[in-house]
Length: 186
Image (tube, rainbow, N blue to C red; front, side, top):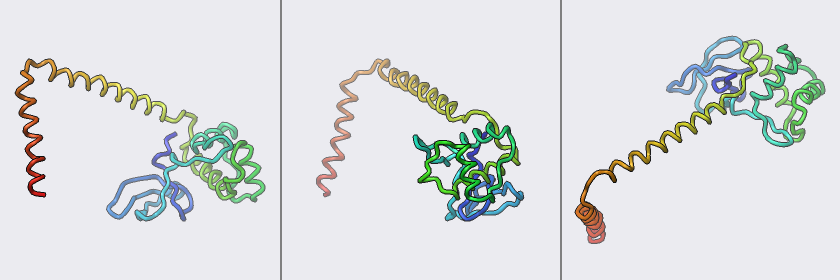
């Protein structure tokens, strides 16, 4: 499940899919009715991949919570987000047993339940593990390749037979000349 292009917009119900960047903001498509609209650059927009829920130990990514809900409900729809506060709290407590009861409010629980049902209806919830580990591994691989290339690049100038006295003297005089000129002007 890749939630980086799924957006929650403050003050707007539901979820939106990122379509394109525009000169006046971002173009999004509603997951509920399929309508496209332009969102102002001043709007508070959050990518679903960046959202996490406070727990007693550490913040738990929303993607992991949605996958846990999917497993617990056997791929079925959750209760309605319009259920009573007590029902929402009880349901959410079963799904995320270690959530921080002081910092996670009923409105947050309702959003998660609503978002789960929207994503489930669109078939966007799956049980694949997040690709962060793969991305980190590929970043590590790129860093290793750069590190391997870097010493090779440093070896080339050393391997060339060059007299070292003349270039050093020329470099030193070039570096010293601008400093003296600046001192006279200032």
